Length: 184
Image (cartoon, rainbow, N blue to C red; front, side, top):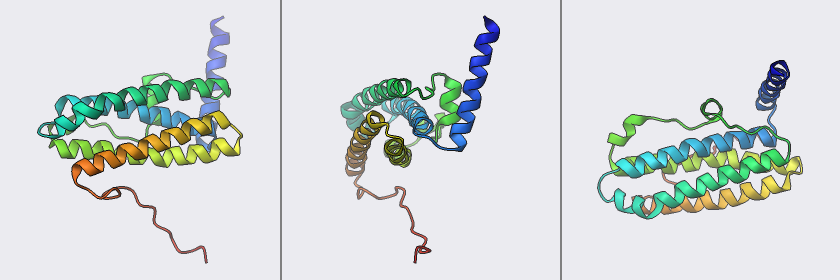
């Protein structure tokens, strides 16, 4: 029995490695689940440690952010299973697949710096979400595509809330794709 389990797990590892080097909707959603997992931990840390008036903002939004991200993790994981895609489920998976950076020392920064870090992470997640939408549509994984579109809409709204609270323009300090001009 153990040999059979080990063989199945080895095939899963090989498949995951292949799919992360030849992106599929499932692999991209695995990255999204990992990002949401790490981001929700960062939300909790910031909500507990951010000083000054940022604490008032977080008292209003952090719990909803955390719970909403946990719901997306659950729903996207179920969709991965339903499409026979691989589902990241371990801390090792989350650390390996996330595109976000954890830093425990950030809790000693100003409240606005901590909040802006969360906003930038929301923005970083959009890169994965838009790629995931494209791949899910291409592979006709319409349920995954719809969930990712809902996540995209929600993340954009959270970026706007955070940026407006910080007194920033909505795009200030966020990722801007630069066109290379070679398309002529």
